[in-house]
Image 1 (cartoon, one colour):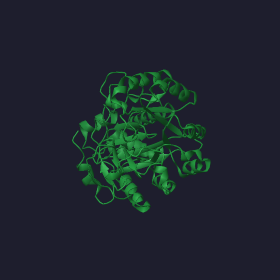
Image 2 (tube, helix red, strand yellow):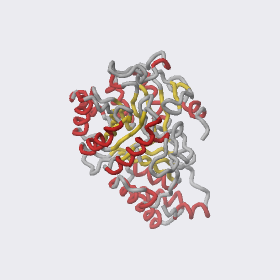
Image 3 (cartoon, one colour):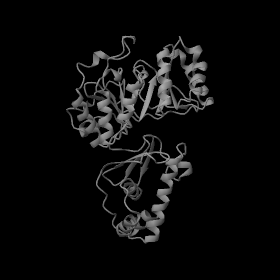
Image 4 (cartoon, one colour):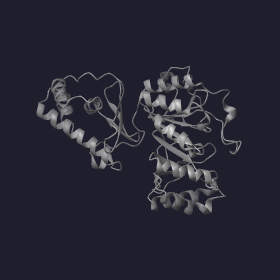
Amino acid sequence: MKERIRSWYDRLFTPASPLPAGIYHYQSPADATPPFRVHLRLEPDGSGVMIVNAHTVLHLNQTAAEFAYHLVKSTPPEQIIKEFTKRYHVSEQVANQDYQDFKERIHALIVTPDLAPDTFLGFERLDPYSKEVSAPYRLDCALTYRVDEESPADSAPVERVKRELLTDEWKSVLQKAWDAGIPHVVFTGGEPTLRPDLPDLVTFTESIGMVCGLLTDGLRLSDPKYLSQLLQCGLDHLMIVLEPDEDQAWEALRDILAADIFTTVHLTITQKNAVQVPALLDRLAQMRVNSLSLSTDDAALKDALHHATHLAADHGLTLVWDLPVPYGNMHPVAFELANHQEVPQGAGKAWMYVEPDGDVLPAQGDNVVLGNLLNDPWDKIWKNRPAA
């Protein structure tokens, strides 16, 4: 923003006291085109973090955060202008012009998902995860370390936990995360669909306002009734860990894509399937997969992984690198990507990981226990996170 309001009040007046810190949520009506979802976290200093559709993060100064607050709360425009003229001692014309400018930029971001906020909307560009925040943007919750009978025995670290949280305990963890200002949860594992209470937990996250994702092998989602149940409960997005040789997995993926839920496909490049990768990516592109996550289980396949990122771009597949991936896999951020730039790390800051017993780690596989989210206060866990 041009910050006309901020520049005037900073020079002439005592800064307005910040609005109460907290997290606020707005979901568009079902008939909105396109549908969208906005989360706003007001920080104690009055600044804000605005998350659009669970993936675009905007860090806002105090005046912009207050505009965002009123947008989320659907405050009538005339009331907003009246309040800003009083709080910041500016004319109605200036307040209205700044408000309309902010509103139009946010609207442009909503209706044009691939728009770069810094390039086209004039928002300040920040390096990802460089801004100090009071809580992560996302919590990755391993509901269980159990896996399907066909899965390798070492595909999840079952020896790390002695028990799984009960349904009500998970709800307590999720409520604590929401109260701390975390707007997004991804249920992972193990295989989370082995938990009979998964639909109940998805329903709960929806009821409190959280965005909810699921990381799964997808096999159980080949049952149309179960898939429909999860969607009706409010599931927002999926990551399917694809086993290319499993016909049921391809059938499930076809049904999922037909259900019109945003779906990321995770493909692990192995010595067994490396030569098939070009054909696999071509098949995924033909199926109109929304996005792709790539990893390898063998450092010797670094070049194959690097080549796959180029093929994905050629097919128009968006590469997602900041979602959790299966245990035992090497994610492409461990290597250089196509632009040869260092990939920023958000573990322990933009996202955290909760094990089946409630222990919190900076990220999956980073086995430093920061505390237990069921038993410990959030502030204690957050203070224990690794230094940047």
